Image 1 (tube, one colour):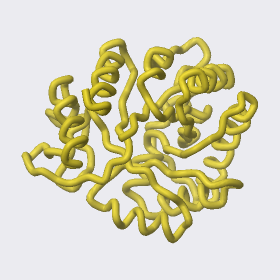
Image 2: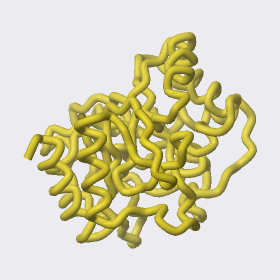
Image 3: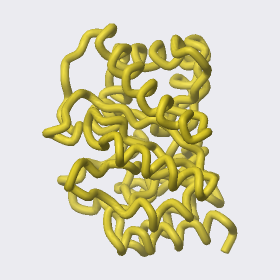
Image 4: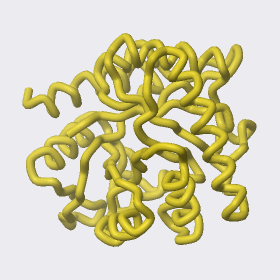
Length: 243
């Protein structure tokens, strides 16, 4: 089981996350491409950190919403979604190639990610954007009870999927994330580590209502927003490695 983290989200003088502290403990870095966060220098520095630690790189594209950090849904046409993704993927890949790195996967950010999971049309556009890119890339998406259906959709489109689970979020009975506004939606450290252990051993999670549901999981999403979360990533890494 791999660990992935959303990185490169600083912008100008605004600093977001602890990328240098996180990078030694993860396997996959989903790097912002400038539409919700990230600027050319931040992208370059984040790529260099990934190269230093042998971390696989992925594009983290978003709706064009830098003011809202990509967390506001936008009504874009199929062609607009495809073009937005290609633009961001190509920008990151070009910078990666200048450092001898190769782009491996795509993980949409924020509202685009949530719309991909909830709306068939958005998901189809994203699959087409990846399938029509000039070389094969993998799509990282949330594992839910619909994982088999999503895998079949991707197979028809000619795209390989990597399913992720979230270490610090509580799940509903359908495998969706409990809204942050609900009590218990975000795990404390103890509950988070227990969920990681359960995923690692049984490929299941215990939902907010107490049900146990199976999840197909290839990678765990971790967050490095603050020093405490960086410490949690180190503990998760040890668990995943069998410690």
